[in-house]
Image (cartoon, rainbow, N blue to C red; front, side, top):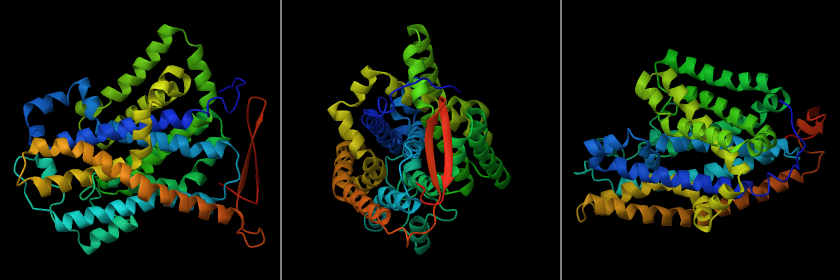
Length: 415
């Protein structure tokens, strides 16, 4: 793939704003999805019918999670592409404090809620709702969630915990696995990314498990590595893609946007048509990821879309999106188990919306931001260590040459 000459920072200046806004909208859709799924009405004909129309986008949980994964791979690749001096130990420290510390706080809060507040079966709630917070956590539950290891029902106490387990696992190995994507030509890099998904699919098929991810399966992690690496490839060619989108005639641009929207909105038809097989689930994931990729590129290419997704309200949702995503399930279950003897279900679920946003804002302010600051401080200390005591590390220097990337490796540092 050839590259046009672009100003390297032109695309980057507004990147975080609109992508964070997109992440905030996705987190809100996940919250709405779980609010509706918790209601007993979800088992009835109306919501079942809604789930089969394009309006399900407003409550699309699966789609939003694949959007999160696509965004994560894209954003994680950007520092690698910038050729900044990023030692792996510093990267890992920042990633642990960014993802794991808020996750651990949410896990402990969920365990406390399931132990102190759970009332067993709640009348008026869906069958799906009744399968969560069904018993206090055991010692094994605690060990599994804290260690993120082994097979376990990782969504039982927090509806979003399962995806963070996979994201943390992928983050640990991402700096090493992304190197071929950066160094190789597009076709070879794409096959490399796809190979991880194929291995994950084969592993899951042989093990007789699905790719829904809720059991913490390592096969699912391997499959998702492919999507992260696909997103890294997207980041590598982002400037070229953005320039091409901007150069399209309006009908072609509309057609591309329509195709991306169709992938994202209608991707679930894959499993509805083929059944919940491992291959169908993987195809569904990739369809969602393609739709998310088109959305990301259009956000970078369109000034109008960038202005919309950097609006103050969406910027706020973007800032709290991670905490909102982490805690919304805990809030829903805590409110239902606490207030069900006194209030109707629809009232409780209506209260869950502002309560979850408030919990997300408080967590972002008092847990997430301090954890990120601690991680950045410790990472900087590691970066400033004397070279005489630093371990040998791989350095990747990425240079622009003849419209492509030239690379060199040395011994001094990595990401």
